Amino acid sequence: MGLALSLLPAQILWINLLTHGLPGVALGAEPVESGIMRRPARPPEQSVLGAGLWPRILVMGVVVTVGTLAVGVWAQQAGRPWQSLVFLVLGATQLGVALGSRSRPHSLANPFLLVAVAAALALQVAGIVLPPLRSLLGTEPLAWPDLALGLASGCWGYLAMRGQSRIFRAAPVDRRGGLPPR
Image (cartoon, rainbow, N blue to C red; front, side, top):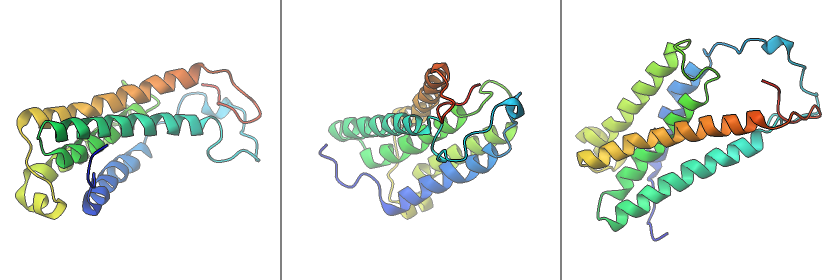
């Protein structure tokens, strides 16, 4: 795609810590869905990634990758600090996915997730705004429009996660290892 190294190792580690650390712990506090104990048990021979998880993971991987690389290519051609935008977009999109993965997306049943995502997003922006973190992560400052674009990218992660949840929820249930009923 004409890009050099899209992310530096420190940037990848930073994104992984922020997008999987805080929100991951907060997702563990997510209230269970009603009626969960009335669902039939999954077959013991079913893989951990059974029940239709492979297609869902693939869809989200494509959405995050294509969106992030599209912004990176555009930013490079526009003469903007593309690597910093890729850094911000990847983190914000993954945080949007975390918000979209909730079983009750429009409730305040788990305020810990909202706080965790807000804190992670603030730290992601700090990696671009604060000079000591910029030096550590190898990022460049972004103009306000670029910063807004990077933050708004979290919306497509959220929308893609909610959309694929509806698509896969509507699929027929296969009792031999397909999608669980909701």
